[in-house]
Image (cartoon, rainbow over all chains, first blue to last red):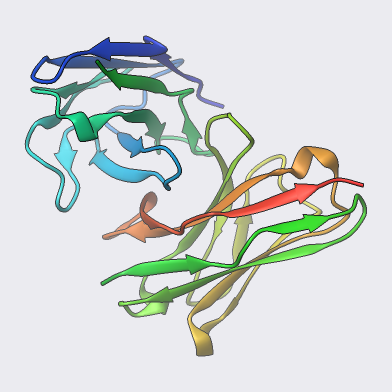
Length: 107
Length: 120
């Protein structure tokens, strides 16, 4: 099973700042990595798939990069509504696995 | 719009069974797989498996074989998750999620989640 490790566990930033979230895989997942956003009390929402493709309706301030074992989700300029937990997920090998999440707090 | 609406919260005793439903609308139900994901209280996401909405064939992740059953009723565009012989460790929020575009392994959108609580 591929283990995904996310860091940091919590990120506390002000509106307008840049957020950089990391996801590291225990073995190469090529570019088969995605990112989800889960706001409090809501279901997750797909943001990024296959490392760098934005899902339908996702604002351009969200971008993904990386390949192999190291991936990054960048929020270029934080908005108050971006407060959420962000999870990475790989689809390279079954079982599909998720990272433990990074909580983004807006000051 | 594309939407998955799940059944409500359930409180069950250990050893009982529970069935969670997931009704799809806004698209052709048999065109996309349905996945199931578990989220224990305050925890992360765990993929349980998926069901082929054309053939009805289920695939279960390790740890979700035996007591967990995925099924469909395509006449009402609904997927079901049944959990038998419930244990306290099954207490969790259970999500169904539609396969995204042509990818069986990306999930969007998700249902709102169904909370299953197992307690005596």
